[in-house]
Image (tube, rainbow, N blue to C red; front, side, top):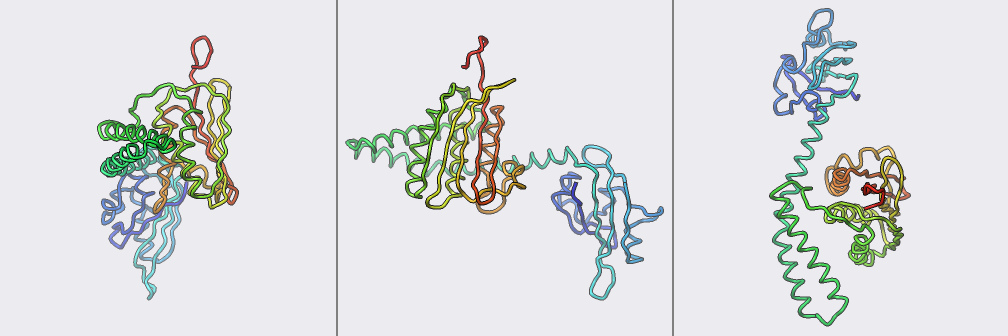
Length: 340
């Protein structure tokens, strides 16, 4: 468990606070700053005396082992270090309290995860409302193009796909704004057929970016899933791959059936030749959206969709050598042992 720290003044009032401390105590910075630290933690004693005041008086660091305190989930122990923070003239202005808990707070982590999902939900709802007007404009343009150029076979093929996708997107937005994001009808989906449809959309992007795309689709059984959500998850990952590559890159998509016990899985492997990922960051890639441009919500949402379907999302890669994202979706079986 990493060290957590905050500053207190001569009156024992908290001057700084962090998200890690919020996870530990359930108290955010707006509520913690200005309070005496003793309102959130037991008084820190050294030889039965107030340790913070001793640091102010003696201007020396105090280290304490296995101090007890209460977090959100249970009583815990932590090593504590109190260090003087001096002004230019040498007087002690504040005391830094550093705590190194022995183990993480499980309820605190759940609280942070919940708040992260709430934040994403708010952004998604705002996005859903914002998409409606331009979607109507696109729908009108597609209808016009189809009527105006109905003799162009290729254009008609694309406008058919666009009209179908616009209709599904309109339905999804309406459901999303009135119920939960994953509360959508599921059906038997042919994964290879879905990828063939995605291939049409991807071909437009790969052509303009000069990226080669290869497909290796093995025979797989249909699976019970929301076609819309699976398509959304796949496109999120594919778009990430395309954004990660320069001209001359290669995108590879493979499907396969992995049999085993207690379950069999359909795997959908999406590989790119982009910048790759630092192996040390792999465990957190899908769990923690980034801040700033390219927040990583697409991969996070893909992971949530796969989890909802009782599957797994695996990420592998090496810096400078590309990234591979593998969807593992469980195959349901009939009572006689045959695939559905």
